[in-house]
Image (cartoon, rainbow, N blue to C red; front, side, top):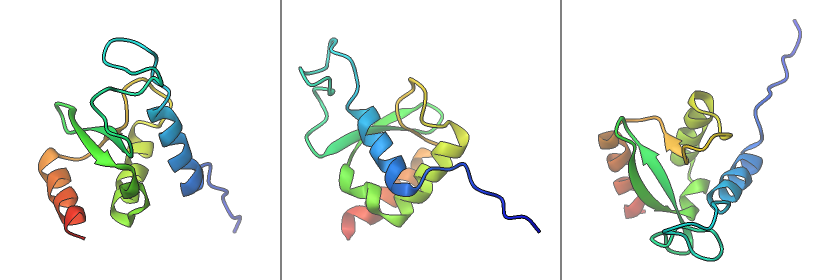
Length: 106
């Protein structure tokens, strides 16, 4: 039985890629001189959730949470990270809000 090597990136590499992507927006309306959206506070980033791609601003610290890492893995499998859609989380908004409300309590 041969061992199949995974072509998935290690979690730390995925997180670095996400952070780089979140900070690589061009300078245009609604973006500051660093290329970051004006409405996203330092230490946070935007994700898009659900069918309507509703935008949520979440803390970067959540990237280290196992529950959020599971969502990131699902996002990578469904959409990949090499696109112009922004970080899109493949789950229903209700489920995402329930998860994030539990993470805020911690």
